[in-house]
Every structure is written in C-alpha cells, then in structure tokens.
Image 1: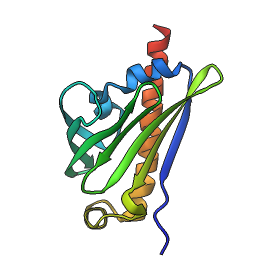
Image 2: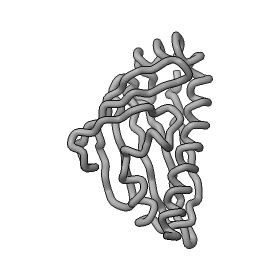
Image 3: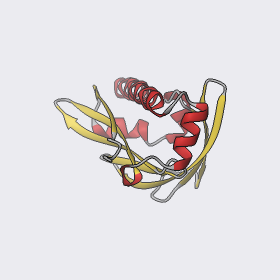
Image 4: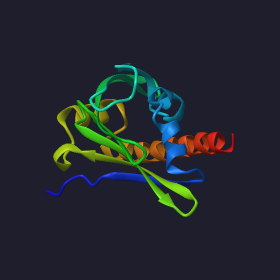
Length: 157
C-alpha cells in the first residue's frame, strides 16, 4: 500500500519574503484566512518554536478541536506546525521569485498514512477522506490567496 501524497498549494505574491512573513507570522489571523479555522488560542502568545495552539475547526455544522505545536519557525523562509490527532505537518515556504515571493502551503501526514482519528472523523462528519482532501486543497488555495492579498496591501502601505 502506497502512502498518502502530500497536499500542496502555492501562489505568487507581489511582496518580498519579509513583507509576506510580517503578515504570515500573525497566526491569530488564520481564522480570517482559512475557511476551516474557527478559533485559535496560543501559548505563549508570541509566535515561536514550540508554541502550542488549541484550535477549533469547522466544516458546515461540524466543529472539532485540534492541538498544534510549531516545529519550525525560520523568518522569513519557513513556518511549520504539527497537528496532533490527524498527525499532520502543515508547512509554509516563502521563496523569492522575481520581484515577489512564491508562498507555498503543504500538508504531510505522519508516516505518509492517515491516522485513525482522521479516518473516523472524515468518514463520519466530513463527507469522506477523498472529498475532504479535495476540500482541504481548495481551502489551502483560498488561505494562500488571502495571505497574499494582505501581504500585498501591507507592501503598498
């Protein structure tokens, strides 16, 4: 049985990596960027390696909690966090491209496999594993577009 491939989305942002980072580092704004994020609480409040977030996610009428730990915070190149339960690493990469930044978002499953928690929740509440991955990828693209928009506004200010 082969592993589950990563989900990957990217966009080109008309702002420098530092300008994009200055927007992205405020992870409290994720509930405005991501269609799945409802609420997040951070401990400690300032973004740092090992920071923990307690999250509520939503899909239509279903809400579920997750706990994340930031595992890679490297200004202005990378930002990654591990989500317990689904056993997934979510990572942002910021790479200079032309006069802007290639902003990418990637989801990798631990061991390349879905956790039991993910399979049960996706099957019972999220319309199935495959359709949820399709929805996640569309949400990732919306999230990147929103972050990119905010970074471009910030860059023009």
